[in-house]
Image (cartoon, rainbow, N blue to C red; front, side, top):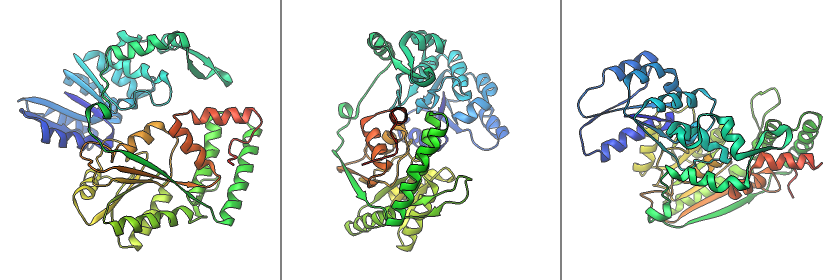
Length: 410
């Protein structure tokens, strides 16, 4: 059995097998140098079920050796990671899947933003469902619209067929159907930028619109400017040359400080999620000043399993700080029933997956999500798009082409 998963959750599989596998097995997590990974794969014991766990990046780099290992079953965990059909990891999984006798794909978000995302995962699972050609699939089910005909829109007369084919080999279980989970509540905590920060923000809004109008109106250009505005609402501003981020506001940090104090007084634990490393540095510095013990996961943290274990089991560790791009997959944070989103990225998948870290099996309390939103900024629009499951980039581009500044927020 070969399990391919994001790097951050490889250890989760080891723990789950330890808890639930009531049969003989041997499990190896393929980590270390490339030669070390190959050695672990080749030297696995032959008794019982042999399980190799590897991340997507390593899988395609070790494809020749993994193919020679000849797994009977290949599992793609968080399978939406191979939604893009022409990247190296996806191509590798398509080839490995074609060779294996059984394939399984696990994900809570098979469609992250666009229905066209289903092609690549299904090519791994069973090419008979949608075929081997991405372009034949696209032409059958989608009209290409928008600027440069780059935006796929599902054909209305093909929606029923697409859904039927998706479900032909899928099993879908919702939380409501199979788990008795507590209710959730969402709170938007509006903060107001300081006058100086507000002036900087308004100037950046004007500059961003002028910059976009001078060039080509594309999703990449619009989201690049949106990124800088989002950084500013979190309290930091980085120059165009990519120099060090400068602190320009404490508005969100002060609001978070109050929330942390309240959680401490109530004796509860708290999860804090942020997008940018500069924000995370400021948050952890604030916790250190308060002498509050915390766990931390960012892209640079190696001992992720230990960080989660401490938060889940150590009563002294009362705050978990996570970067949304790396802390939203495969971990359980049910020691807390409150999660604060200090800032958000634009990924629907990251948003939904991160929320599920506290609202999952093992949670007995109602869960509260608190969103820190800077008043009259792009924060408002980003949160609305995520909650409405809307295409943020498309709506911003549409505003630009209609002659409106897409970054203006009442």
